[in-house]
Image (cartoon, rainbow over all chains, first blue to last red; front, side, top):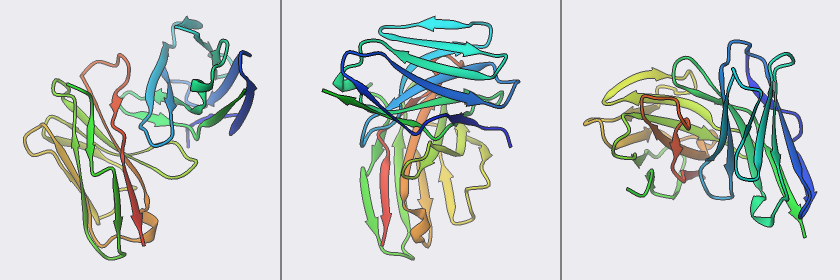
Length: 111
Length: 114
């Protein structure tokens, strides 16, 4: 079946460095994607979204890149901070107003 | 409005017992979703409502699961005859009719079946 997934389950990054989290999707009809951050004991929290008519979108310290040719998404976090330690999910928005999530990447920030 | 509220936050129950969870969405949101999340996995869709109408149910939602949203406001998710495999985080989310920002999640109810 078609699904959204992430390349690596874990990522360890030095505080102050940039982080890159990757996600591959298989449904070529997907036209809207969202990155969520989930901290321990909390629900997923919206970070940034991107529509399929865009290649890049920037927020505060975060950038999402979309490569429709290879069906790949990435989330870049600039100057990673300890508060960025969490699980990050990409989610695909279907035509029926339903989000499908990948398995997630756990980011650990080293001091 | 402080967001999506879920109660209880934690529930420990014995196998075979029934449990019920409650979700209070953001008041102006007409769509309400239930997801289940097991350790190390992303949330999996269970069901969703538009106002009081239940529009879709996942095949994950066995006959032991039932969800209601009687007045188009809060929702309940009941699991009958709980099994150890039901142990998970149950997440509720709400959203408007537009796609912007997807939807807002609550903090979830952690169910442990012993």
